[in-house]
Image: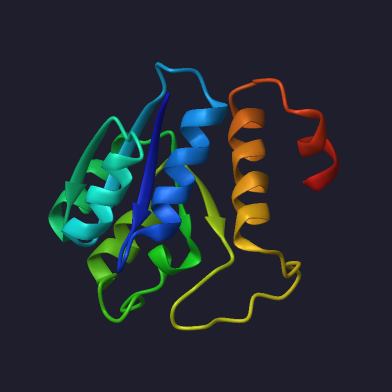
Length: 147
């Protein structure tokens, strides 16, 4: 199982996702940190991602290895994150064969209808529950009610 976490700018969302994945999944789970910049990649590696790469080409090249791709909705929006998500990155992520589990948080702001407004930690918790479901891992009792 290979999970890619894609993030940019300060990398705080990606770092939080990696931290929660490490707590919830088996130790042998490979978590690939793909940052649009070195700060984002570094934060995810400090959160115990297995390996990391930075930049447009590294993301476009590596994203195809992932069974699951996680991040904010911004990772599939060209020129988002103040231009850090290039059209090549957005296309590579959107076109990759892995399952995408994207949080409805974006920069620039997008209104996504049909999604509940939840705090970031609740969104990450829901995303982790979907990852566990994908791999047939047992959910925690509180996860059952949240998703």
